[in-house]
Image (tube, rainbow, N blue to C red; front, top):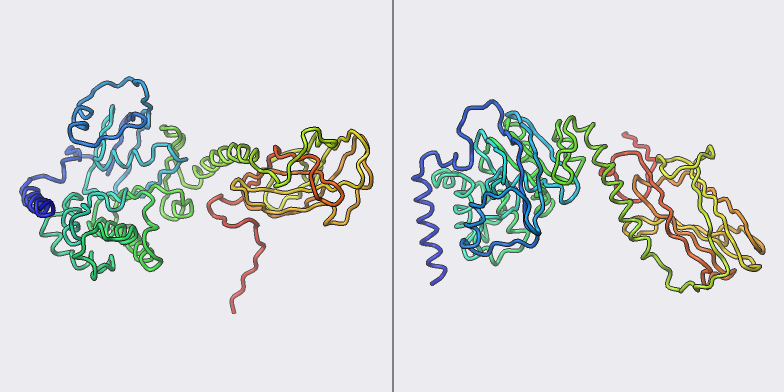
Length: 437
């Protein structure tokens, strides 16, 4: 009975929506403007833990006009302004929580600003949360009509594109199955297929180009290229910097709800990477405190690592290096009594806890002999060719048989800079030579 009611409401909605004149301007400015989008001094706040479960909860919030922050509220966007010309592809980048998705939700009409104005010139489609607007009790076929209508297509237009949408999604066998029976991948594929066939003037894309299997991703990429060629205005939000570099000439860098920089992609991305480096350094420092060996270190240790200094090949002390740059360590040890043939180990650990490389004096057949009092050890790591990132040095002094450590130090940070963070995968920078015959 409930499903039948939904179907009647669904059909009524389609016919009602088709009868609305100027329906595509419900969320768009009607004034004539040369730009596709104008975003003027926008402020948007949220309340931590706020969730609307009913229309009764949401309506009072819609009409609230207070601009000042109340208890538990925070600014997601603070006085943000930008313009996008018709046919332009704009990238919006920034750390998590910077306000990127909030901008897209404002532009798509899902939420409204607390202050400021925005204007949209053209037909807009949003690939924000793929499958948003689907109803679980409706079939794939019915949801194509429902979702297409919500996105701004007429019933006649959906009729003409229906077969192409289904073919693109690859779900013809399941199109009359309720979507609550779909896997998350099937759900996402159908949502992308509907939105991608809207033929919009403006397309908002938020990290949804990785849905489905490899074959479907290839179709998604082809569709994006088709939209690019059509002259559509595109706003792309992604942490995939190579994708942003390939698609966008202009980029906005958001940080803590504000525009930190705006300009050419190659100028703005390095600034974003500096923020990422800084955040990763803090993460590494937090994770470093958790890096421990299975064996415990005695509190009254007879050995201490008093100081660690990092040098380049020219004996300049620093902690930021380029790829392929020579790295040397100088370690000052202290002992309370004579220690027989201790072993010193060095590990370079990534932020996620992965040990990228490791060595020790025993493995390298370097006998320290007996140590009593203060001693300085120099360790030449050479050109270790680590990829750009932030790493922690974990040093330890062991007994001669490496059965237990006297002491462990895990507070020294090593930063490698070079190629774009996003353009590199793995641990080491390979020196590859390609040939074609």
